[in-house]
Amino acid sequence: MADSESPLLIKRYASRRLYNTETSDYVTLEDIAGFIRGGREVQIVDLKSGDDLTRQYLLQIIAEHESRGENVLPLNVLNDLVRSYSSSAGSVVPQFLAASFEMLRDGQSKMMENLEKVNPMMANMPGIEAMQAQQAAFLKAMTTGFSGNWSAPTDEEGGSATPAEGDDLDSIRKQLAELQSKLSKMS
Image (cartoon, rainbow, N blue to C red):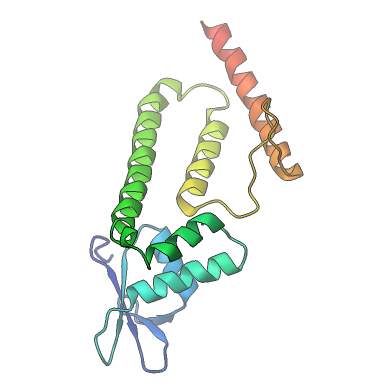
């Protein structure tokens, strides 16, 4: 198994094909996006010149996802990013974005640690597996980003949801009510 701490080296040939040096095969941008989603850092270099092309390809991956309607970046954020390239704020933006994503990762990490501490106490509770699956799905959505079609679930405050989201929310509410009922009986 390759050392997951070191970046996965991808070489770009003159034909613009991308070559995974660990597995000795050609990869696509979607493959590279999958490596990154899996927690692996990548480095993409031009074989002939040795230039680091990582930033260029990562931006291309983001642009392709955004063009397919998988909108993670709101329009106002994109506008602000464009503005930051032509202003003195540009020097602050990279540090701010890095700090924001670091805070998000730390928050997710702490939440997982807390869930792991609570897990042993709740391991024998009926329905806990379904709740854990829902938590994992939520964390996956947070780490991979929400699609542009996502809207807040229906709630007492008047949010809205698509029918599929409403069905999922009803199921979650039902399971939560069952868990609360069982917990209150245990007390």
